[in-house]
Image 1 (tube, rainbow, N blue to C red):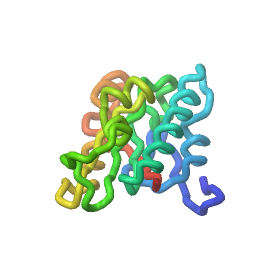
Image 2 (tube, helix red, strand yellow; image 1 turned 90 degrees about the vertical axis):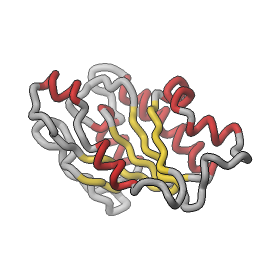
Image 3 (cartoon, rainbow, N blue to C red; image 1 turned 60 degrees about the vertical axis):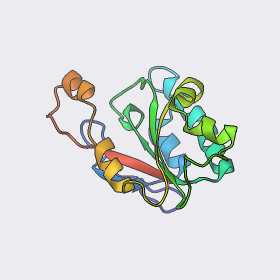
Length: 165
């Protein structure tokens, strides 16, 4: 599927998973693929919260991109519980900075983002942080819960979406 931006989102496989890899998309493409009503309004509700979260992250100015993962980007799952998000922070940004503002902290606090947005947030911080692609490789693994539930092969990998902020 190609959007107005020219970015192409690969087709989901027979399991409803993105092919392995990091796929750069627009928020419109995320909405079209994963933010639409299925059996319930859960997906559109989560998508709206994701938009709010990304708007606040953009206003904060500390991240360069977000990587969207979890059952939200699995077409098979009709009612995802939440969205997993990896924030890739700007070089030089430091969580240990004593001058972190409360609204910035609130966007990085997994407890708060889970409660307010339905998002599990993980961060790759600063220039000396682990390679974001390593973290993506970890998140590319299909949750063992879904592997067992659908009787899929162990070690199954899926794709992750990348959106610039």
